[in-house]
Image (cartoon, rainbow, N blue to C red; front, side, top):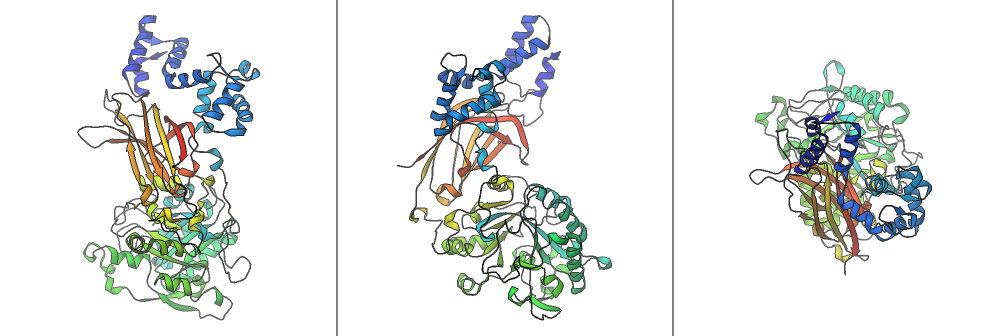
Length: 599
């Protein structure tokens, strides 16, 4: 038996739900529903008027979809073309619950609804969720999921450091991890955000964690971005720990024993862990009799972060910028482990074009990257077609907030490092981009960002030879089982949908529906939003549902972000995610997507 209160506690109360329940309780003269009544009640509760109308529009007899009916729906609405006939049979076998209907090659309304809410009916093309991209291109041709200060679980000043940060990042598909290394007591290097009050963890514990989790989510290479602030003695300890713990996973020489003219591909580096850091000389001198140590520039992320932000008064006494040396000693043992990812100071684009090596990587703070984008976006994009660039958050972001990664992706920056511990729009975009290609952490950049001979200007997409803008039309039809945003008695959401486009400056746009009062169970909007998208291969579409509030800030309900190139046309469901990226099933949106060429 099930009481009204128990149902109300598990659902987002609406007047429709209350009315339906009272009809049942009056009919059966009791405050409870038995098993049969509950099944009937559940069917009434989950009946979708908009789906029934769509079903009946294509049903020849008003009761079922014949094989031909379903084929017509797939061809006309879902735009599946020649595969419609075969796919219709597959869908009937996969989603139709009635064995009789299956035998007759027909689909009931229950089967139709199951199909529409399944992965096949999702807005995200399931073909693009598998490993579908060419993984044999040089590393420079991929966006690489990257984390900033991976060890931190909280803020940048007093936050807790933990190996859990590495576990969660790797599980999320991250392929470039940051490790800030400092001298520890008893000769043991430690990892923490230097010159702050963040807690410390052992370097060896970090490497043990990486060894255990590196390839559980993706088999493609992991890059350890090491910020080395250790003495020569503890650098030797670091190098030995890397070799002892990682073993054969650690890349210790070029894959063919030769100096590369181009970087290897993710496919060639499968199962390997690469060290990114400073290096004495270059790969050309690997076989030479190098000294046991050498001096390298002290310029790195941490030194720029100090200049970027933190005041010496707020930090421990050893953080005075004046104490930073212009040169740092680097031991040969650690230097020799840097193969394809050598930190190299950026002078200017001309210098990089003439003197840059394929394995050189330059790092920029977000503010420096933005300045370059503003002044020379086309040159930046061309540079990133030749070499790898890493961008990291400003030191002013002591709360571990993030910058918008889209601006950096627009010019082809490969490693856009974010604070994975901080949920919000920026991580939604990161998760959205890397949700394709089997979530392997590598996404092939569009061809316009891979061709170093042909200049692409993000500010003038219309100048490209194959310019072909598209019109994206989204009919926001309805929502299903949207969760409450607070636990107040009688609280019911007033939901509305906002659609946001992220991409080149010309494509940035936002539109939203009206709000529906007091209905989180089955709100219906039936509103159409239209967008012009000039460079679809760089665009991300973010669907946001919020609870409208006239007096205060709207409350977040759920979101879903998908690459434009992975969208399926037709009637589709969008399965919402929470603020931290976890599933909110069965909460969803029902939309109709249409993509056409702009006239």
